[in-house]
Length: 288
View 1 (cartoon, rainbow, N blue to C red):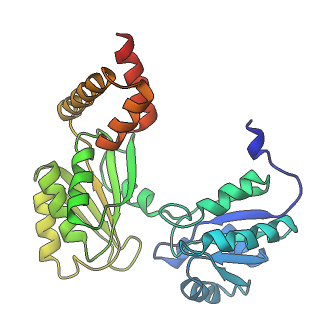
View 2: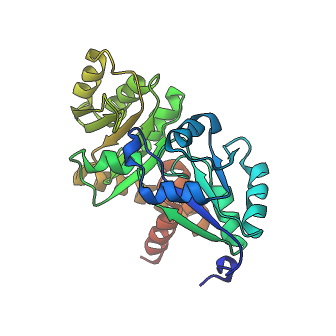
């Protein structure tokens, strides 16, 4: 075990508590108990989460911890933990740290040997995937697509040969543009499933070729409202193989002039593929 993260027997516990993504009944009894017994709830938005806690009858003191203040607030939370108090970390919805704040706090807590314990529950990407009918043996969660069209198209083109199911979050004001760009970058026939408003009253799934899904969204008067999870069927084997051929070509060209580590870094930046995987691939090509 890495001694940097050895767990201390003293101090409180930082609980990472998943909260509902829409339906309050999805909150587990364990989660409610942890939120009730903790000395502090660190929440992404105290107003939003405060309403949930009030509905549950939970009176635990709250503190805002979000993207813009996490570095400053994390130290206060860590002090509470080191004094022996338990703290619950929650996001606005779903599982904290999944495209939400918390990484800085959790990593530092583990570095200091403090106990970090997950309280599992709702997660939008898992909820969407299990009901989508797409392959789930391998999937790649890519968070939010870039907001600007040029960067978004470039990101999609880099991922077009990926064989795993691709998963993205998207906002309502960009959903139509995002699907239009998917059709352009990956082909109008690429299979998509989009989940909207998961676990809520107007939960909807749109499925089919990219061009058809785009039209479904346009035809639905609610098609640009709510929260979205986009899922894209991975590339067929032929496309994936073609993509790897291009990667190998880049690796071979650069290996003629640069060391393996530098080559892996550059090709990772160009293709979006994992640097460690490319490093191993480059070593193989160099040896052969």
